[in-house]
Length: 388
Ligand SMILES: Cc1cc2nc3c(=O)[nH]c(=O)nc-3n(C[C@H](O)[C@H](O)[C@H](O)COP(=O)(O)OP(=O)(O)OC[C@H]3O[C@@H](n4cnc5c(N)ncnc54)[C@H](O)[C@@H]3O)c2cc1C
Figure (cartoon, rainbow, N blue to C red):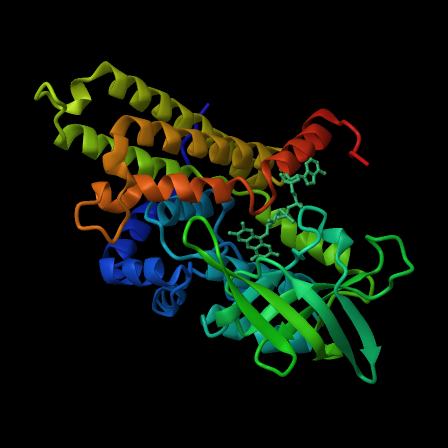
């Protein structure tokens, strides 16, 4: 049994590392930190020029036809270095859905610009009154001549303020059962009736609440069938639910090791000689191994064309809940010194420990909360019925 990702993946990993050394400057990371925006146009452009925005897409669609294992090696490195990839991720996820289900005109309009990192697409699923149950969307789209009029609001529309479009889930048939009366649209953000208000979160990440007040959308910007939006969402969410957060754990451990090797305790000995520290390091390292293996198994199943549902959820659930626990444990070890944040000149590891505690919480919420991941695992790994 071989748990490695293979030679091609390791070659891509090395290339990714070299690329990040060159492109992911301290200045660029600082800009992202200050704005709270997990997207940077210069970084996205550089990824695009390298041909890496659509690594896993078929070559004829503008991708590189790479395997899920290669993609994973690449993504492990991006996450380990905290690269600003959220905008890239949402944009390419929607572009891929359009490549699969969009009309030819829509493909032509979006895909070349997405591949060139010229546009950003935000996700508009969650609403103020419903998030986990996205199918309960109340935002309305009503037929209006040759187009549609959208009315409603979406919560946590991350990157809406820099986005060209929002991928919006709207109710088109209020009489139909909730999963059957939905349609998805690509709504241009720069138009009358679209209102964006900033929402600052615990981790410092900026997200938004967005309002749609009689916003016009042409029928050419509809994705998939009228009232067939849940099928489109299925294609989109299949990708969102499958990721883990191993890179974040690795970054935390690297910082912890450096702190333990560089710092001395009250007895003058290096922290790394303290059994309480080594015990934590051993535990975190083991949890990283399990997270990594769960994530790699998901990628391997994908590469073999086998069922991933439930397995991706295990990787997401385990890695995010462990990250949360690890960050708290590290803060306990490093004490009040770790409470200083990035902009403080004396902050430990550039504020990395303090940031990890704040950021870990969000990872257990977005892309499906821990409770929802457990439901998915119960259904797909154990065959239990869907909760009503
Ligand atoms: C920083 C951040 C960025 C985000 N970015 C985006 C974005 O770009 N686009 C977007 O559309 N959304 C985004 N989200 C929204 C995110 O996907 C939702 O927060 C998440 O799906 C949960 O929805 P909710 O907040 O409405 O909570 P709710 O669904 O109201 O859940 C509240 C609580 O009830 C639990 N719960 C709900 N249903 C069940 C169930 N069936 N069984 C058991 N427990 C349940 C949940 O786990 C949670 O603990 C973002 C969220 C955050 C925090």
